[in-house]
Image (tube, rainbow, N blue to C red; front, side):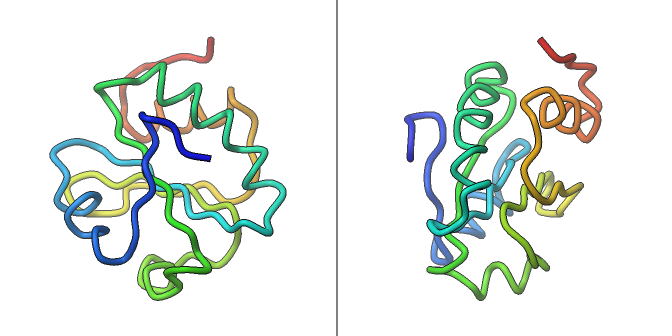
Length: 116
């Protein structure tokens, strides 16, 4: 599922949209066959709305772009990796609640955002 705030990214656009992005980018490495990945969709949509303008969220289909997954060390689905300044800052593997994802992003960004 794709919203206007969460866009898909592929191998061809990964460097430009993630590694060379102006601000922090959260990449959701997912797969169609992965139920926890689908369960994470509304969590990420809510996060995108809450942090609009402060965090970019992109989704990468692991089955379509396994070379990007290998390059980023993605071994399980779903994997969330937060990139800043072209580097992976932190990662979260597996399904997590909305509160945990929000706290994780806040901690990784050092923004002081709290769960709401």
